[in-house]
Image 1 (cartoon, helix red, strand yellow):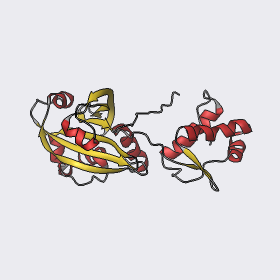
Image 2 (cartoon, rainbow, N blue to C red):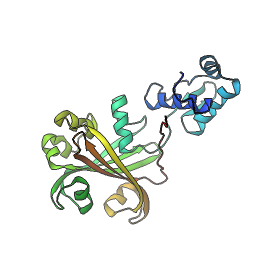
Image 3 (tube, one colour):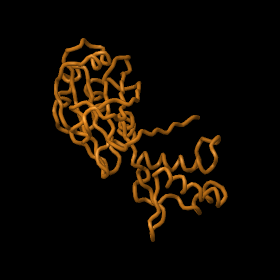
Image 4 (cartoon, rainbow, N blue to C red):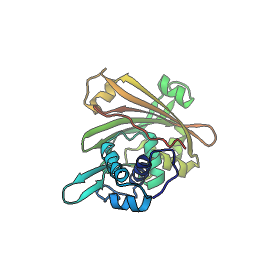
Length: 245
């Protein structure tokens, strides 16, 4: 179980390793997490340190204690953004966390707005692919996500303009059909008024403020493959973990 983050306190390092196993699907929700005895044996730490590991996991939503069973893994109820889904797709073969589902709201060719045209580096009003999805879990709407892609990608992958599900999500389909792999992204988080066409899917008032994230993706040739904007559901938050070493 030992990792490569010696700068972290031992309990945090061990907790980070277990969180990574949960995120990658190596530990599934409901699986027993390593016990205090397991951690002491495998990591050579004290009882106090091993005990703090489970406390950290519970506090961050990665574990829960069930009477008669013990402490088991769970997936935290946090926002899964486009970048998260790309990483999930590449590491687990699925862009969804346990309990999540998606509704394809619309798909087709639309004129590019000024914001979309600027992001995709095309002329305003030119035709681009638009896909709109609503992500949900047991707590309700996670986010409404809208993606815009250059028209030539819609020609290479006509499924992008259909409301049918994509087996490998947008990223995988584009790579399979064109060889263009997303290798760089830019994320911009802001508080924005919810437009009318989004408000009805989030069940909020038009113009109410919501957390929003815009993502721009580039391929290995430095060309933009996708621009996306997510509006988060009420009460949701954005969270990210980064390895600093």
